[in-house]
Image 1 (tube, rainbow, N blue to C red):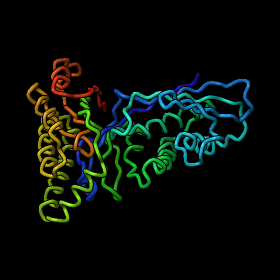
Image 2 (image 1 turned 90 degrees about the vertical axis):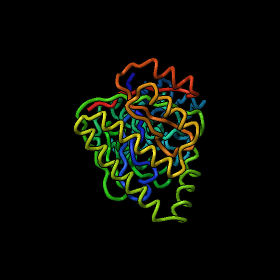
Image 3 (image 1 turned 60 degrees about the vertical axis):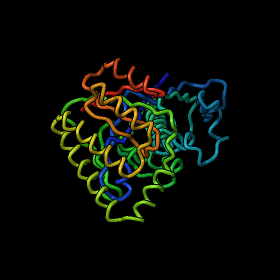
Image 4 (image 1 turned 30 degrees about the horizontal axis):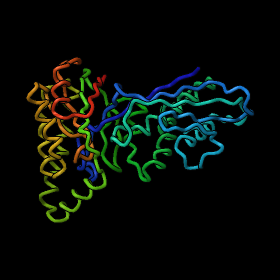
Length: 312
């Protein structure tokens, strides 16, 4: 059996302002992964490829799947790059611990795990640049006009500094740090949150442009704090970013409650991650294992908590 895994991702700074061409930072979430296993499927006709996704109740030949099915297309594009046209049949099994529709890059992670597992199955290597390109093409199926941030963070498994239509820069951090991701249990309506901010921006552009500028400045400062290994500064910047997100009107009571709980329990910083109005809260912890913090968040209403380390 051949296997490959890929991490999730989370937005660290710059939500909403990134839509207005300010920078954002995203980091990989190695505590959650999508994994793909491939093994021969004897008895089937040569060239038959099965996609098996137990969580989706799916087991189907890619020949019977639509051209725009992202799972099938991930495999097809990889085989095309490898120039593999004839081969014995095999089965791809997908398992993932990354929550779907959570802003954590579950689709991109599955795609990248498929690409790398297929390449390994044929005893080949695909350069990260090509993995990223294939994943971006598949992201178009999921999102129509993707930013490219999910596939880039997950392909390179590094933090990324991003400005829409301008730059997408993986960068290094000085030291590892730990994030606790707390799910509010409230589905984050991305379209509704983005629309709410846009409508407010249209009503008072001067005010909201200043808010976006401040978020952009904080994001740039956060990149410097990560490069210098200054976790105390990073925590303070998270709190400042959160206040600005509250001013944008996207921090729901459930977000605010978990953030206050985390800070009261000694977290270095906490803020929403993603669109807001529910969804996830990210918490910067002082140590990798802090059971009391997780207990406090669960007692405050978190539906789930995921710990991850972001490494240099």
